[in-house]
Image 1: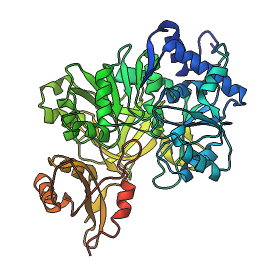
Image 2 (image 1 turned 180 degrees about the vertical axis):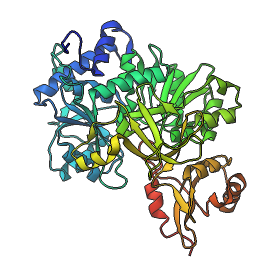
Image 3 (image 1 turned 90 degrees about the vertical axis):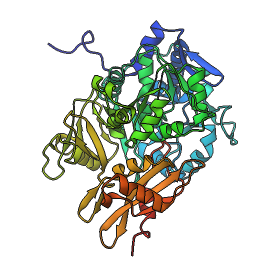
Length: 537
């Protein structure tokens, strides 16, 4: 028995768009400020753009880069570019010109879609880069700035107008062919290009539907940047469910609360830092909801206090875990019926764990980094999270050595240190590079951060290792206080001392804003660099 066209069709998430446009043609697909489209309209726009890409000479396997915000154009790129056979490369909008230039060159970008507000940094990057991609500008009247652009540069809407609505787009011949290329943050060197295939993104969407218990026609606020792990794949997931996507150009608590209310949003996602901003927003802009609003959060382990605050506003928060290399989430803090008997603080603590594997995830284990053996399920033994599943990357673009290292011994090695509890739920304790070894004792920076978040004046906190002549290294806390709140270094150190093992308390507290990535993750590498001269003498 052999594969044939009747019994085997390559899996690709672009098929979701076409099914939904056929069946739910008039349902709203994308809403952004004063613009809205139906699924039929979204499909036609994507088909036309794919046609125009071919007319401009884009071939199968070429890279098309996108430097844009969460607007309809960014959503459409997740379908139009793959429908032309090209590889979608979304770029972090917060990167500097030199890093963007490196990505252009490493990916060999043939075309660039760029939001006009970002045209200046894109132009600077192109002046450094070796490649010269065709530029297409996205004009948005809601942009904060409108830099001058040469009249001979192609406008995005012209791709729509000039494209053929009857263009015969093709499914990939091989479901294991590249769909997208996402670059890591590059905090320890040059960013690495992570390659996703069509099969993995299809299965990620299906696993998300089951794991998040998604219904047909959800209303989804796209607050997760679409340049980050392709927005956790939710553009494709919402297409599969004929959902309505509410675009959010930039994150601001007042705007988020307004959109949640205005559009009767049912689901949204965001990093814990975003949830913290919502939970600590001024009371006059906060809104609570009697209807259930489901929230998916992923990133640094969320403090239980933040989850508790979100729950008090009527949000049903599910914590998930993943990496760029795993297409996003592969673990979830799946709620159990027995948790309903817990008080809010206990429930938040259980929900802050990274959890158990998603339906599309074959195996996630925690192994001892020295012996390679699985750690006992006692909530104490620390090991590295390793993963096997169809939503692991194909590999690193142009980097076989790093790919081989990441997949050593038949596992993807995450670099995250965690424990497993008796109930099988995994909880991260730290990144390998973030664990603090003080006098031979391991101190989890996440544990110290969680205690700091319990203090009523603490808005955001991050803990890193600080050199110490006696102990080798000790915890140093960086704290951003809530608006109109005060706390001294002595007070916070004493608070930690009274709420955890004495030796784990921070030895120094530095106050001020914390550096963050565009996805809201606190940049610990910057904090580590700043403490080199803070150690005790």
